Image (tube, rainbow, N blue to C red; front, side, top):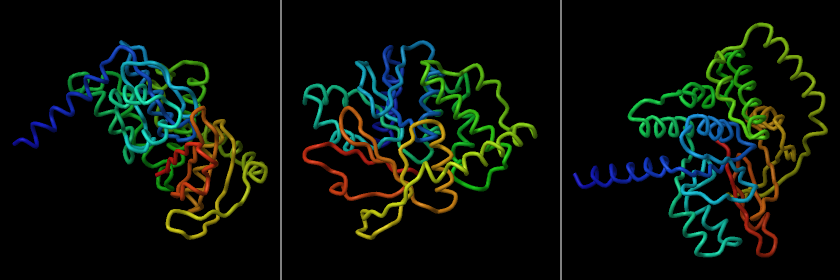
Amino acid sequence: MFGNLFKKKEERTVIEMLEAQHQCVIFNLLDHESVMAATLYKASTLLANVTLVDVRDPLHPADTYVWLGLGNREQLTDFYSVALMPQQLTEVMKNSVFIERPGLMKKLSDLVAERSGGVEKNPLLSKWSISADLFHDNSPEIERIVRYYAALDMCHRAYAHCGDAAEELSVMALEASPGEVKDFKKQQREINKSLARKFRFITYPTKDSTIHPFHQFISMDSICYSLIRRCMTCNKNFLHTSMSVYGQIVYSNKRFDKQSFKHGNDAVLFIQSE
């Protein structure tokens, strides 16, 4: 009985935080589900001031911080402790909601529905969550993958231009037309031609102390979703490293020993793809 009581109290606290007037949503621009979830959450939270922040950029002052697929409280506290003052870090983490994988968009959709009294009023998160779950799999039909790529590109552009793409995504069908599929295949052939200039092949020791080959790339534009999906569907490893204002961000499908990337006192945040 006490377990259920405390569980309800915890969930109510999370919902209260998601009702805050000023919210900062931190996500990973390179991760398809994280960028989709952030953009669609903003579109579903019309009564609040929601600021979207890529994990590589500075945090904004807010009443609530929502972390999408970036790790748990302990991992993020460790990363930000190098750059933030202790009092500031404590305040940020005290007012944070952490939504982790797997099923990131489904979890966020359920919270948005609970916040609205049981129903997601503008069901964008639930609409696209199934496609998100299957994006790194070869099982979905090509029509659905093509349309999800289009939605991803739309969210990527919306973030770049401080929009939300809500209207377009709410009316967009989940499956592409034959003409769109044809255009998509042509576009993918052009991407295939340029892959040699996008990737480099390296080896790194991982958390289990074994050496693995990786496809490393540095792109931050929407082509990154195609590059990562190619790796994941072919059982290849990928690695992306970049610098944020707080330290180094390492994004991969494998876990690494922190010492492999650490330079002096620099903070390192590992984000693992699902």
